[in-house]
Image (tube, rainbow, N blue to C red; front, top):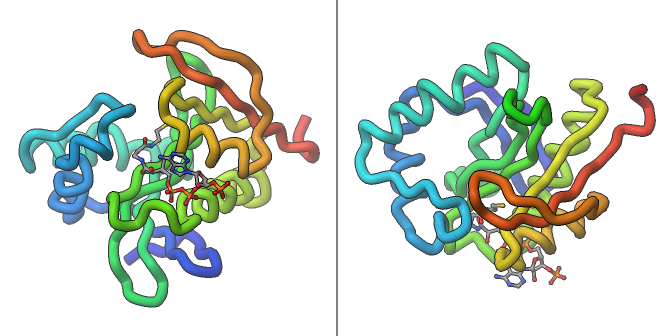
Length: 171
Ligand SMILES: CC(C)(COP(=O)(O)OP(=O)(O)OC[C@H]1O[C@@H](n2cnc3c(N)ncnc32)[C@H](O)[C@@H]1OP(=O)(O)O)[C@@H](O)C(=O)NCCC(=O)NCCS
């Protein structure tokens, strides 16, 4: 296991190709993909997500979506982290957890730590977060992390609220 960093309650590690079943299970729940619009229908598709989307980010940018585990029990709860979006030339903050872990402050803890890791360890200048208008939980997470609301826009055909965090130490 390649550990990236940890918080009080959570461990962040790199995904590997062995994690296809975890990605599959996570994206199987329609409530989890309600606002992300990317359900996964089989293990092969989960493998493709790992191979084409998640793993290349680690090699190219030294960051990515990290697998998140509960420190105390080792349970996999989902993912959180950063992703370079070439089409927007932006680094995006994202998170996605299985339903049984919602409502315990984990997303806020994970998102806040990902921003800090991006600023303090990777010297990133700007991180952007977006949530669809009805995704109240995600909007609240972005706000609780201290990100600044910069407006609404349409991305991939969906109306979203957009937030940013600026690293004061990087020009
Ligand atoms: C969005 C998500 C990550 C939130 O995770 P979480 O661990 O429940 O979030 P937290 O416990 O840190 O809660 C943060 C705040 O949001 C609030 N919140 C969480 N879910 C909420 C909901 N469905 N409705 C209203 N408020 C909600 C919490 O009450 C808390 O605010 P408070 O401290 O003022 O009470 C989780 O619901 C999820 O994985 N959803 C599916 C994937 C997804 O939509 N990802 C985001 C795409 S932009």
